[in-house]
Image (cartoon, rainbow, N blue to C red):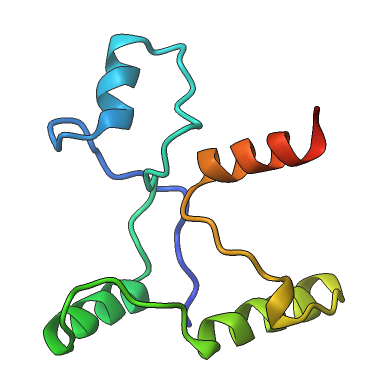
Length: 107
């Protein structure tokens, strides 16, 4: 993978972006609740999405073993933390994950 410029932000105004429309209305508001990209995607990622779209049917897929292997390898490589596949719980969003964490660790 090549080096990439994460400092140049694309202009998302007039693109129906919830994040930037509400920021336009209140410039002091930090939009940390929404997973909107503030930089262009890597060319490799863009191409992978295009390739997938051209060769697959869209639907609800279960997580592949490759996904779990990637997570396990990431934790081992970046944090020297060994986990097992059964220890991984996938949650589709930061807000639901925070809700589960709060409910799990508080009364």
